[in-house]
Every structure is written in C-alpha cells, then in structure tokens.
Image 1 (tube, rainbow, N blue to C red):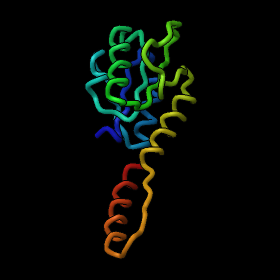
Image 2 (image 1 turned 60 degrees about the vertical axis):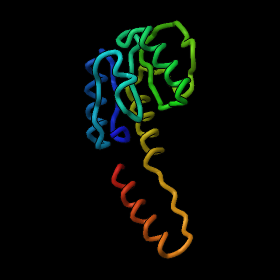
Image 3 (image 1 turned 90 degrees about the horizontal axis):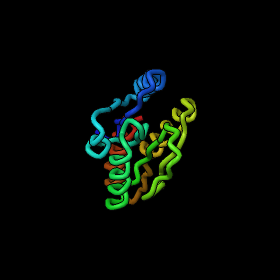
Image 4 (image 1 turned 90 degrees about the vertical axis):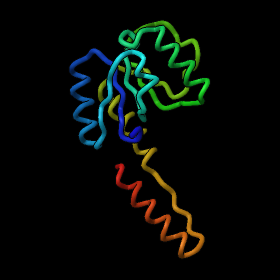
Amino acid sequence: MWLSSIYIQVNNPTLQSRLRILAQEMNCELLSGDTSDIIAFPFFIAVVDRNQVGLKWWNTFLEYRLETSDYLPCIVIDDIDKQDIVTRKKIFYSDDADKISRLIQREKKKLTRFNIYYTNPYIQRVKMEIAIFWADFR
C-alpha cells in the first residue's frame, strides 16, 4: 500500500541502512528496483540519487508528475548541478541523513492526519470507525 511505502534508489549503504531502520520504526516498507520503477511503484515518498535513476528516467518521472498532477514528495540526494527542467514542486534536495529522516517523518504525519466532522449520531459512529482505521497507519 502506498501509504506505508518508501521508494529508495540510492547507492549509499549508510543511508540505506538508516532508512531501513527508520522504515521499521514507522511500520513502513522500503521499495527499490529498476530505474523505471520510480514511476511504477506506489509510495508516499521517494529518496533517489539521479545518478542511479539516470537523467532520462528522472526527466520522464518529472514529466509524469506534471501530466498527472502527482506531487508526492521526493528527496534527491545527489550533487548533480543540472537543474530539473520540468518541475520542482515537492522535490527536496539534501544528502544529510538527519534532514532526510525528518522530511520522511513529516510527510508521513501529513498522511495520517484525519479530520472528523460530526453531523448526527449515526454519521459520528461511522466517522469514528474511519478515524480509528486511519490511526493504525501511524
């Protein structure tokens, strides 16, 4: 399920290990794969090295985000100076493991937030059941 999946494509064993520990603490799973999987896999946040993904697939990913209005957060960890030519919405640039961890935790909290509005007793009961369901994702 995309709400509990973090996509990573990095060639940094230290960062991979740190993200694996963070994912376990957050009850999430790490996904990684071929370069095209950045579009294929469902995730709530991605951590990528554009050197690993390849600039061709990276630009395809940015175009896909623009066409579908899919602005799920993505953290870029490389030091490529070339600017992204399509869009930069919800794309963060950092190679600091602490900052990456904080960004992932912040974005996950945004997804688990659920507002409840009461209109009558029957609707209240149904919405409370939904709120409990959403609380399980924390």
